[in-house]
Amino acid sequence: MGLVATSIFYAYMQRGVSRSRFTPAYWSLMGVFGIHAVWGVLTQAGNWDEFARSILLQSPFLLLPLAFWLLAGLPGRYLRGLYLFFIGLVTVSALGSTGYYLLHTAQIHKMYLQSQIMPTVPDHIRFSLMVTYAIAIGVMLLWKRAVQPKGRKPLWAVVVLLIIYQHMLAVRSGLLTLYVLAALAIVALVLWERKYKLAVLGFALMWILPMLSYAVLPTFHNKFLNTQEDVGRVEQSGSANNYSLVGRIYSYKVALEIVEEHPWVGVGRANMEQAIAREYKASFPQITPKAYILPHNQFLFNLVAFGGIGILLFTVLFYFPGIRVWPRQAPLLLSHYLIVTLSFLVEYPLELQVGLNFTLIFLLLALNGQEKPSESDLTWRPV
Image 1 (cartoon, helix red, strand yellow):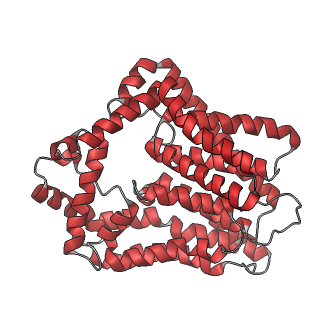
Image 2 (cartoon, helix red, strand yellow; image 1 turned 90 degrees about the horizontal axis):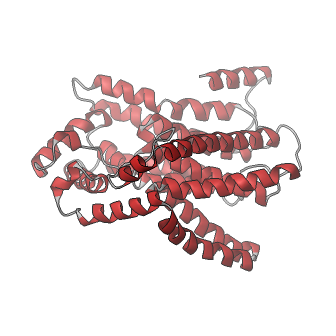
Image 3 (cartoon, helix red, strand yellow; image 1 turned 180 degrees about the vertical axis):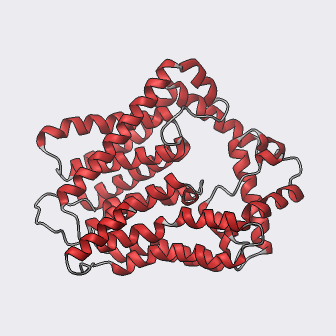
């Protein structure tokens, strides 16, 4: 709300809204909120409190794009400062998590064999995605020489530290996003930058780091063993009570059963928990109610809630800003879209406050980087 109030005050002082290059992109993101509001007509009696909670949770899709639309392009030094501040916050949190690990190594090593992760702030899945994005930002700032010479070595050290930490944390989502971005960077080095030696080095590191981590990091090693055990139990529905990966697989099966019954407009977001519980009970009675989970896939989650029509609208509206920016170079916007999209495949981050705000704020910051800046700047403008 503070950002919205500041943006309105700024627009008033400037005697009107600055002419944005990407007005349709901001409005398309606001349209995601509209989907939740319109589908509220499906809310059943007794579920209106859940509908109100969902609308409040999704309100950043209405307020944040409006705030950024009202703002002019921030000066490049402000954007760089904000990104460096984010890297700093992630680094401090990673150091705190590492300190806890060093004080409780035996306990944490055991946790990794039981589908658990060392404590982080915020939760380990969202934090692992933030670590990947902090690494991507740091690499781009260094590649574009967008930091002062005296700050380059410390930033390099932070990037290396975060890469090591990501392997020690050993969250599947974080590692997947890190290696997909690394592969994309290697392709860019070969096709556009013609930096073949650097590409070969990057490719070699993509093979060496996982093997080295397996050998020297007990958390990585134990997570690998736990994942193997999870995969081996997929056919046993009762294992969904105790194994996270198995639980996710069965959440997908339950969701697809509901989609077959409600293919066009879904069951409505506020009614999902009841619909999911009924389907679990009917299809998989071996799974106990405390193990019932919503589908851990944002696209499938939206398909259950809003049906085929709703998921089509969501996909167009959410990804339109990336299409609108094309063909301008936007490495941070592309990186963030990739991180978020990969997380959509295994989580429903837009249904959690931290996940939603992380997704939306950094999309909007990257979009603001494409706007005409309010002051000239010869240094690379983060986009």
